Length: 355
Image 1: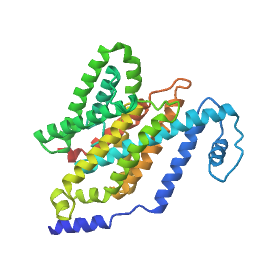
Image 2: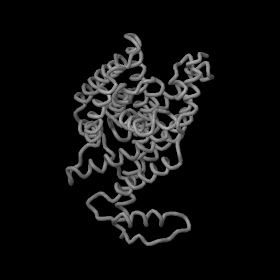
Image 3: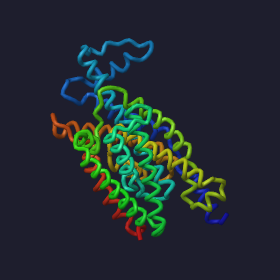
Image 4: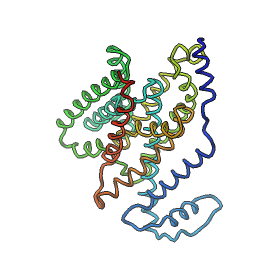
């Protein structure tokens, strides 16, 4: 191992660790935003009633929230599922973004810009348009084809990028080209199946509308298993920042790491797309915000991206429900309003690294 690699590794070991204060503060912010999301809506439900209702569901605690039966149904069948789904989707997309950025050693890598969202979207559209049933139920079938589409997209983007070079700009352009092609195929299939247009269009622009907990039970295993793999890989991703040769010299199995992270990140993206449609820029914006505030170590980026992604998407959903009330904006429009300028700022500040 070179002296430079050794010193870099020692610096990585001394990297700022996740402090309890930062973790607790992030979780408190998430809880506050979640309560804000639960009280937002035409039916008047106070934050105090929401907190008391949650406490009443805990073992050995009995309190009166003051809610009538109608308010309780609204809270448990509509608002709480929507808030939880937003948190899970935000966590999944942010984790996948931080994972892609780690294995590609590329701060611009994200499910949207690498074409992964478009690939997952195409797979889901095929499942919807042709009514494909993989044997696990309709939503799981969408998730299965979305995963296949996501993997095809990531392999295609990587292959095209490596055939032309290895720079950040080339990989980014390859992902954009693959996404454009897959989106064109998706649009073609939609036009051939006009009877499904409304369902597909509502799904393409992203939505967290749900009338129960079904989507949450579908997404939760993906977030739990794949999220755990990514969290356990964060130290190895830190070492990988030194380069593949240096990482292997330090005992990291780079090929195994790369494929495990790619598969888990793609599964997270595909499952999110299956239940909420295509929600852009979350996997790019949140990890960068974490880096700006707390540093670039993946020991921090991965766990704080998970919490930050949940917080960001729940708040974005509140805006989507509130800006044109009683109408509702697609949540993908809200995240694009935030993400597109943020992406432009990243490109500007990183312009020297893109050539």
